[in-house]
Length: 299
Image (cartoon, rainbow, N blue to C red; front, side, top):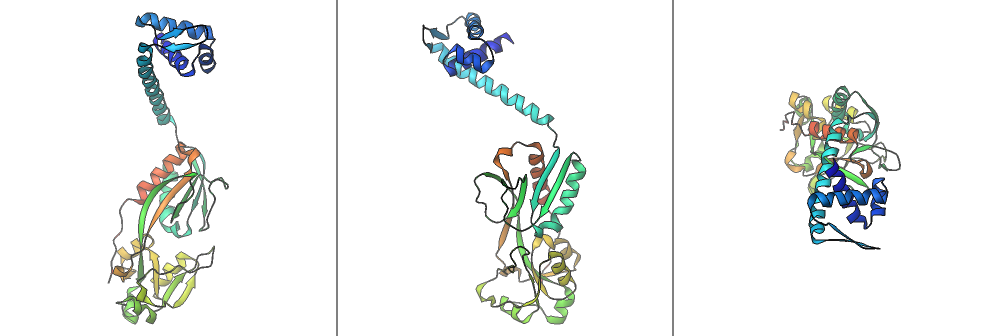
């Protein structure tokens, strides 16, 4: 311990330029710092600092020893930080903003997280609006699209694609579209964003033409149900209908004509990067959303 105290006193003196300044950093008197450095020099058998009335200067041995000392102290601080982090359990209230369209996919993951980390209390806000993470006091926001706020840390959660789906009964009754232009002859179910009132565009090749809105709905659950009931074709993110495709309740068409891809991101204030509850939540959601499941079928 005496060696460590002497090393710390020497490094802080060399960095600050005086025993007085080092003493302020260490909570010691200048005299105590000077004596600690002197005892270190005695043990090493070399002079580390040249002392004059007004200035301290590193000797050649002192310059070499300073580099090693700084590295030792940095390694010690990192080791202490690593041990402390292992003892930190995620706990407390976690305010999370999530997209409406991700409700079906995210709720099972969030319920699993709550069972595994009962000390974390989730405050969930499902909406599609553009939120200000800092101003609204949010801990984590999950969104798709482009990220532009430099005050935020971000992590990719999972990529996703889009698909056009209908029920087997619908295709028996109305036939199967083979080209994007064929959609003009079909019943098409459109999603309307609740916040803006705009329709979700169907990203198809330019020759698709006008896609008639047979039904417009601002509930993604109702849109999926309408497709399952055979009311028409719906354009949806693939993760929302993975299970229904695997069960045969829905079938996808025109998969080769849908180039659009999206990515879900988790973003949080950079000042809270080391928060155990944020770190644990983001790690958990990323791990679960990247877990492959479901089987897609197409005509």
